[in-house]
Image 1 (cartoon, rainbow, N blue to C red):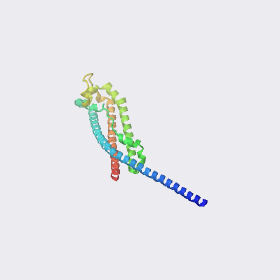
Image 2 (cartoon, rainbow, N blue to C red):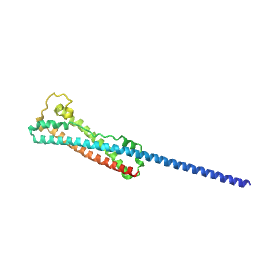
Image 3 (cartoon, helix red, strand yellow):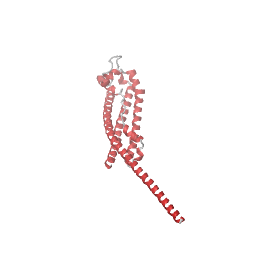
Image 4 (cartoon, helix red, strand yellow):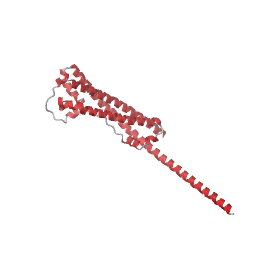
Length: 238
């Protein structure tokens, strides 16, 4: 009798243990499923907001490229005037040199996209094409930072010092800036700039930088548009 009771209790205990283990595994499974669902919903929410952010910054890049290309045109015209040595074009040259003395760095704002990446969601992305687009986005930001730093150094170390020594800035500043300046001071001998090798090289290097910047804008727009396209595909699947 005792053996039978012991066997029954043992079977009962094992059954209870199995039920508890199954219950725990089921609870863990439900918890994991729920956590995964919450995480996926969060990712989808990020995608929706990132898509809007990308639209805004793509438009910003296109506007900035347009402004940059205006500076390119002015620098090209200034170089042609210097090369022609046409003194009748001095007044035109005066109105063009402000483009060389201006330093506009690329400006973007990606708070949502950067937050998404800082949260570690990149490792959660199963779509390899989308993951690659996010990586290209990060590379593009580094390239933008490098170009901005280069342009700042060029302006501070080369362009601004030359203008300080040789040109009255109030005479050549771009129209939007000139209106707030005080007219006066020593007049610039613009005719002497025609044979100034340093002036020629500054304009040439500035033109080179501006064209590099223009290409960078095109590349940035391409990267952002590809990222947006992949995100839109994911939202359609969801």
